[in-house]
Image 1 (cartoon, rainbow, N blue to C red):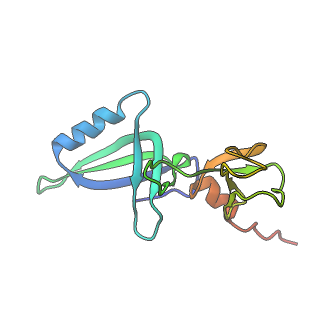
Image 2: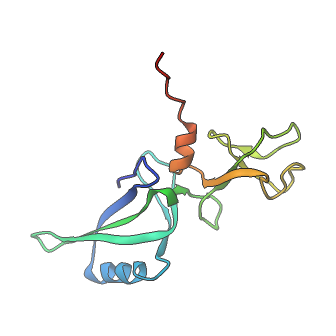
Image 3: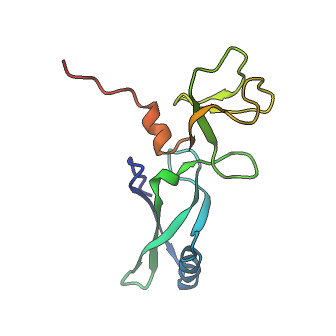
Length: 152
């Protein structure tokens, strides 16, 4: 698995498969909306989810006859998978202003909030919000990084 550091880049996942499964994946990803890769895992990473845009990027047949395919998707779509049974990504918002003392929403390292229904300030939304993005995605990682030192 190759995960891009740039939201404009592509993430890639390669693996060995059969011709029939490769054809099925190619047919699924050829549709207008693409296919959603709901959940995958990679060593030393939390479970990932990609809500669309997956395509078969390449097929490679080895000398022994095995078929290796590579799936690719825009890195900006990648996020951390929701651990609840419904799956998908954990979306959170970076609010315009700091949350008040009454806010009980779960806070993320990037400064975003995952709204909870019993929060008197946000309820089920984090409005007003500057932006929504998937937890663990490229944007979230970028916001979490410390600002680069400015040369004197």
